[in-house]
Length: 445
Image (tube, rainbow, N blue to C red; front, side, top):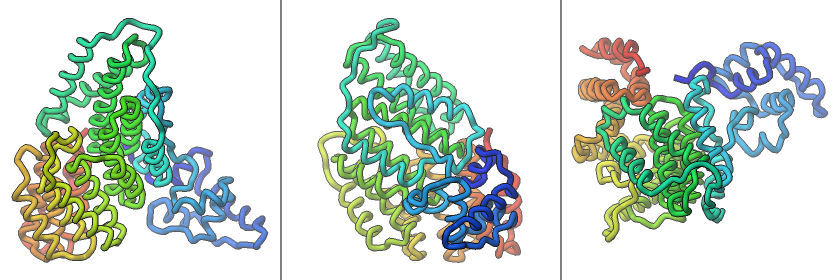
């Protein structure tokens, strides 16, 4: 897992080669030179607490940190701590000029697992990207002037092979990651060096978007959030070039899901809102409303959450003649029930949450093991909040079994996060064994 540095402040220091003591000295220097005569009691222990997420610096301390790094006050006011610190990533601009650049950036990020878990796009960056996607007219594709001709038969084969890889059962996908990466590299080479018609070029961009999206989900499951974000940014750029609004909306939804997972729900609302404006299929709209409800629940906005849950249910029950876009075709009443239950957990409505999650689990098809593992963890959390410890114990063991079998690091990590809630019940038979298992279960390579 990309966990060598876990906080943007530590990363910002590393970019400048500063120790914690160096930062303290610069903060004291900034305090002495502030016109309002601020004084700072910052020491190395305070910096350590900030970098270990144990404490948030006061606004006055943030002013001095901004001075130390030479950051304009406007940036500090525009973003919450620590997202205004230097070193935050910005997505590549949309437009056909940048599609290959975005793919190459994503491939480099996917290979460099030293990048940090916190290195994801900020709320402002995601909001800007979603507005750009919604308002910027896609460029017309142009025929490449160099390289060999790419014909439709080759693209047919690439599309068929990629579809077969994507359709593999969940527990087999962990063994095909390199094949998917190679497919994406091949398509990127063809886009960069091939000669093709506009129609073939659009198909290549669409295939690149689908592959980058799938590869991004694999990195996300491994806990490599920086690489996942880069791959999804490349996917969005190529979906935009291919003029596929539905796929673009799905990729914005992926960004939003990642933000919610990383406990940054504020970054999820604007991308989901933009996607809803430009997506018409009821199944797609249902999923987007459901994810926005999750963001609102995490933010404590109960009324907004309930409005989105109602809209998600109405959309999912709406008949439509055409099939749902591939990125949301799996959306079902099971997903609606369990994610509604998670919303209720976030809003403190434990009994209702338990009932909804239980309902969703009974509806989920056996083919969706990764989703089942996540849902089982939600169920275990609701059982613990209801103090039904024996049931929670059984469900947690089942969830850990599933997560280990499919090789999804983020699912194993999610189960491990239940350990503190079990700690008060160590005297109950089986709890101590589970906590030992949670501590010693290895993460997948």
